Amino acid sequence: MADREPAVARCPGLSADDILARDDPPVPQRLRRDSWEDLGTAPIAAHRYTSREFFLAEKERMWPRVWQFAARDEEFPEPGDLVVYENLGKTVLLVRQPDRTVKAFWNVCLHRGRKLRTAAGHATHLQCPFHGFTWHLDGRLKHIPCRWDFAHLDDDAMALPQVRCDHWAGYWFVNWDGQAPPLHEYLAPLPELFAPWQQERNFTAV
Image 1: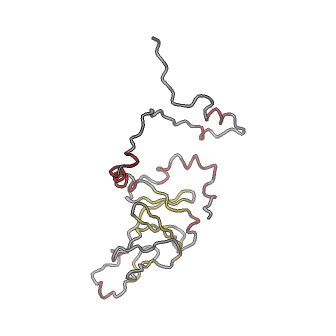
Image 2: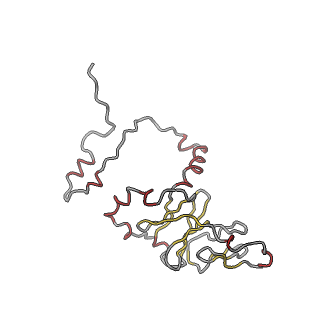
Image 3: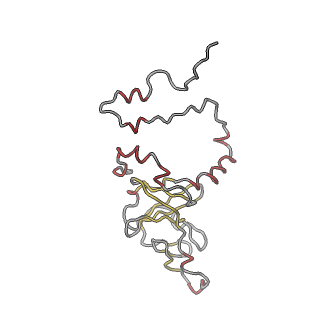
């Protein structure tokens, strides 16, 4: 019996590359790179989508380690503007600084653990609505009510813990454990592939 050629798991007929080759002007070569890989046709076990154990494994081993998209520039354009990003029970504040850079903090009061903010908005400082502990926009401690009761607290140690954040083309990302590769390295090759669409000129509209 003659050897059979290996099956190709693709729809017969025109390929996407065949269609792109007909375009005029030509489609940039970077958009025609083929990274397709035959991974077979075996079904994926349903427990990948329903198993609590698998979910907990993702929660522990995946989400803290990746860059997560948290906000767009236009959601908090001015100094003092802030947004709240939440996922899997964790909550992060992204705060536009006076110099228009962005800092991200765990959205947790260091006194009793209440959320500092529950919604996006504008602020001149970050104040816990429970007991009034207050921080500057850059995370430095500003005020503790009844300070005489907290002589044991050191101001520097009470600075809000920062969360790693970075920016690409108007998108802000956060990384919980601080160990992910640099954002542009993590996103590669998408920044190059998306360059013709000038993502930095896009905006979120309601």
